[in-house]
Every structure is written in C-alpha cells, then in structure tokens.
Image (cartoon, rainbow, N blue to C red; front, side, top):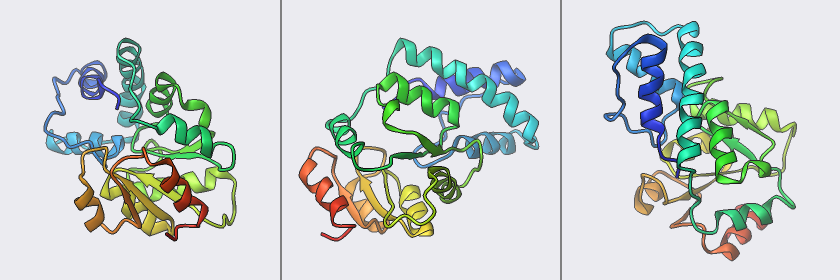
Length: 208
C-alpha cells in the first residue's frame, strides 16, 4: 500500500496546468494513471493531448516521490518472502496502472524493486490488457510455457484472460474475495500468507 497518490495527482494538476483538481471521486483500484488523467480532462471539457499527458506525468513522478520518502509504502504480509522465493526460479515483471516512473518509485521505497527487471506501464497504454501484452514482450520470452498474472482487481483478471494468462487474484485491495471469484479468476487468495498454496499453484502450472 502506497499512501499519497491522490495528493500527488492534485499537486501535478496544479503545477502542470494550474488546475485546482482533486481526484477523491475516482476509484483508483484497477484504473490506470493515463485513463484517470484522460477522465479528468473529459470532466473539465478539455481534449487530452500527448503533450499534456507528458507534461502532467513529468510532474506526477516527483510529487509522488516526495510523499513516498516521507511515508514509505508498506508490504502486505508475506509478500517479501514470496518474491524472494519466486525470484530464484521465475522471471518477475510488472503489470501496473502506474506510469513507469511512479511504479519504480513505489517499489524502490518498499524495498522490492530489485525483484523485477521489466514491466508494462500506463504511460504506454490506458488499457490494462494491452499493458499486460507490453509486459510480456518486454520480458524477452517469445513463447513462455506458462504466464501467471497476480493482481487484486477484476481489471487484472480480465487482462489475464485477454492474454491467455493464468489469473491469481488476491483480496488485499479494493475488491473482496467473492467479487474476485465472480470476476472469473482462476485462483483467488484472501492474502498471500499461505506460501505453500501459492507455490503449489505456480508449480503445477495453474492446476490445483
């Protein structure tokens, strides 16, 4: 969990365009930063352009960096241990609705950036399914035997389905276990504290 994101958005809007713009009304769970920016522009009756997006995100990253330095993000229980184990045998990448700069900033301040070497980010695309495709291409693996996408929103599940990945949903975000189950996840965990079950699902190629 990384605090300060909404305040960073408000600061970036002020610095980039002198807009007094909050994002309290927007549900960030499963959203992408690019989609959020474009939605705010639509609400204000402004046409988003590539230059505007660059201008905004150039200010969002340092605004969030400042807040992360003051209040570093915290990991959910057992996440660090799971990453340490998986990093020995798996290629780990990011599929995130954050832009690249803020995604790496969050991981660095949480102490887990070194586990990841590539990713798909919303500075490249607003759609999470396409972000997942970008991440797979960035991995350098042409035809991996099995790809798992672990996430905490229906958007993550849909992105996995669209790409033929196995989806593992974790109810530690803004969606509960039942909602994730109904969204069609291949596997749903309340959290990642059951190391054995997580590793079993991965080792068996998505078959329990």
